[in-house]
Length: 130
Image (cartoon, rainbow, N blue to C red):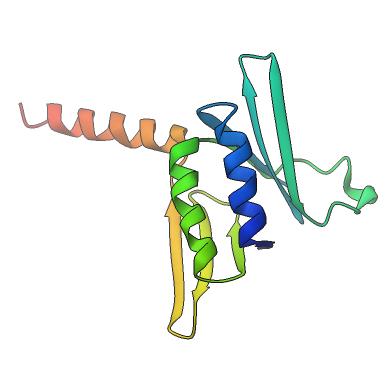
């Protein structure tokens, strides 16, 4: 998992949300990148994790998915619950944070690709009943 400051996550989403409606999330073994571009004119990438690992520059990206900016922005509300958020890059993207002394909250978010795939599967299963 990549552990980041809740405040930094919130700031990153505010910046990227002003650029576009889709955020590209890509991850390597020890880092995660959030990228957004406005029709190729302007773009921004924010990285978290171990960025000093020069040996792994050639390392393949193990995760690369697109998400709606609004969906990721809803998680920024976690900033008030704890100082850190852990992000696990997988399908679906997984966020974990403590909720004060009460316990922890786990949130799973599907990428745009996964949502479309599920939508197609639902449409196909509905046609079986016609």
